[in-house]
Image 1: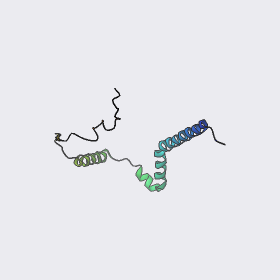
Image 2 (image 1 turned 180 degrees about the vertical axis):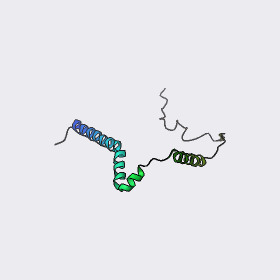
Image 3 (image 1 turned 180 degrees about the horizontal axis):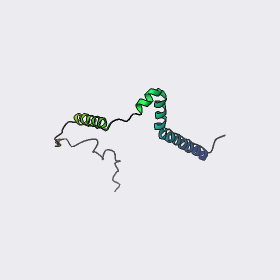
Image 4 (image 1 turned 135 degrees about the horizontal axis):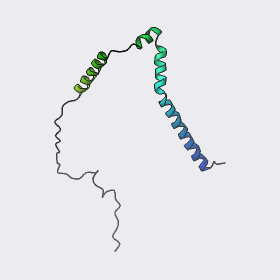
Length: 107
């Protein structure tokens, strides 16, 4: 006894939609779950130390260090492009005629 194709398609769509819904819920709550796991592992004295505010000068120093580190990663480029022409103009990427069907002349 075979199942209806419409039933099979409906069950397939339903499975995909439920999977997408579960993935959405998992990713939307990922930050909350990670925060709970991180705070669960801390001891009470570590939690109190983590709650202390960081001074604005420390934040500015960290931001400046990160900026300098990222700026040092990139080289200064001239911005000039050099295009080298080649004599052989044939390329399999540009030859459309080979992929097309050749028709006979029926006159």
